[in-house]
Image (cartoon, rainbow, N blue to C red; front, side, top):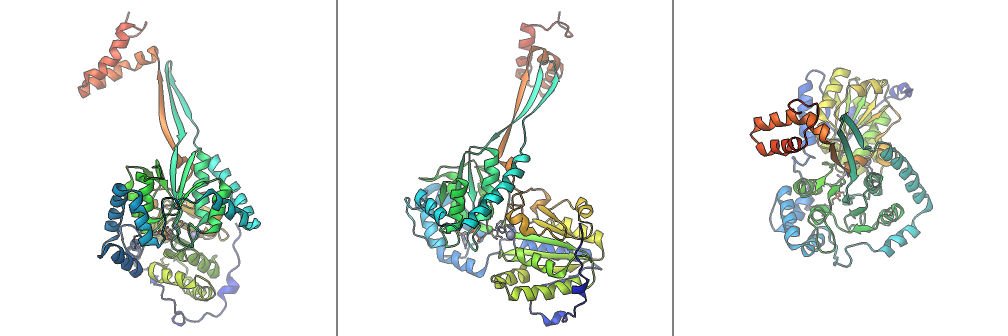
Length: 482
Ligand SMILES: NC(=O)c1ccc[n+]([C@@H]2O[C@H](COP(=O)([O-])OP(=O)(O)OC[C@H]3O[C@@H](n4cnc5c(N)ncnc54)[C@H](O)[C@@H]3O)[C@@H](O)[C@H]2O)c1
Ligand SMILES: N[C@H](CO)Cc1c[nH]c[nH+]1
Ligand SMILES: [Zn+2]
């Protein structure tokens, strides 16, 4: 992978950092890597479900709806309980109060006519894009699909791991602050690749969400017909428990804000969930071959999700300061510049560490949703990085490529959970079952071990279920048998 030549950019005279107005933390951790790790953890915790941090607007809305100041967890508990016990009436009530949409049981679901009309009105180039991206996603998601595996352990002893698709899944498409037809594709296409028959999509009824014609056109193009104009915790509750007009699902997948994440956590057990796919995050790891203007664009691209957390980690002296200048320049000309700026200031940081090893150790501690390795040896560095939702290798592999088109789903774990959780894929829509085929000879061969363990556990019924078979039809050649 050839690195771009950054020297011409580096050589430009940059104004001193004080000249920028972007109040993004610049952390020098060259002497104390632990302080950097702690600071970053605290920054990122603000966005995780454990952080429970809500904007002043969100707090005001809570007070308006519930008549008191409540923590997000409490808000979610109340919504879930109301929808579970009062069904559609409570669902419509929360949709009215939280999303300002006056719906009825009849208008909750997007009609077939609306879908067809949105599809007819969509720009042909947009539909072409959906088809091409669908091709990339389907190819990858089908290629990685688990296949049944059979192992012959001996005569009369055969084992199979069998995979079958889930029957009915619920997909949360976010839509509070931006429209996400891409999230629809990143969930529905893996589910389809696995063979899921019924897919129920929920999307908030904002102008950005359920009523967004491009989203509806994408649904129609993908053959998704069950779409409800609901969002937040109330939509998760409807999918998990079922309400009049919405049948319960087996699994709920898809990204969302804090309320969606907390609701998914809370209904796990009633249904399965994918992961906590919350506010977007990126760590960009950069060496001296990285271009500061590219790095700035990469940081902004996740910050503009608003909220989103963007962190630069480098050991190159002066690089963070150059990136800061480019951030300022690029934000000035960007439509969502204000939102991205707010995210960069609240949840972002530019960090300098002592060397590559420390950068890698720090990144592994953070366990980001996205990791972009913008170095001259991305494959080598990636080998040592083990806790990220998705890793983008090289200067020309921005996260946006994975967000929109590459092939793996962009629904990825966040908030440090990539330490143990993985991104959504077609295999998450499969259920596995063991098939155990044992005939009389096979049972005879296993019998000594089964009966010994049954004796040790004091479970004679288990032992009898084996010996009764062998005693009634002894196997020739087995010890103790004639
Ligand atoms: N990790 C991923 O794969 C991924 C992909 C796309 C988007 N995202 C993230 O998803 C998030 C989307 O968030 P969003 O807000 O735009 O849309 P959203 O659909 O997740 O949430 C909107 C809903 O939140 C509820 N809500 C808002 N304020 C509330 C309050 N005070 N009390 C109770 N409920 C409230 C409303 O009912 C509304 O319908 C962003 O943070 C974005 O970064 C993540
Ligand atoms: N970056 C998001 C996942 O964190 C996905 C996305 C959707 N649209 C653009 N980006
Ligand atoms: Zn994105």
